[in-house]
Image (tube, rainbow, N blue to C red; front, side):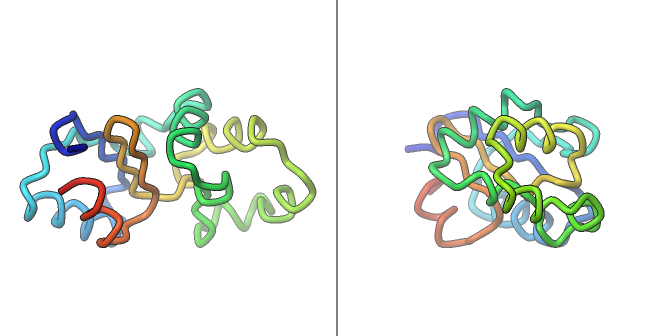
Length: 123
């Protein structure tokens, strides 16, 4: 099972969804390494790797409700055909642009907190 492998939990501690996700991990006995998304922002290479393992569209890695996303007009840039590599470079510039929390466990990468997805992947 995925939970047997070391789990990386990438979060922003003030984020209420991250707090709920962390409580869920603790309540379910899932051991993890905590990583602050702003103090230790994912690199473009990490994001590219996680994107490949997640099977998700690159847009799912953006924090679309964040101020930074709106300030930079990221949706328009994505709609205009921003490449995945450009997206990873942009995401790597600021942790507040990245959707959170992120779980990385072996080949499993989860973006955002959906309890049913986490249950299926981690328990």
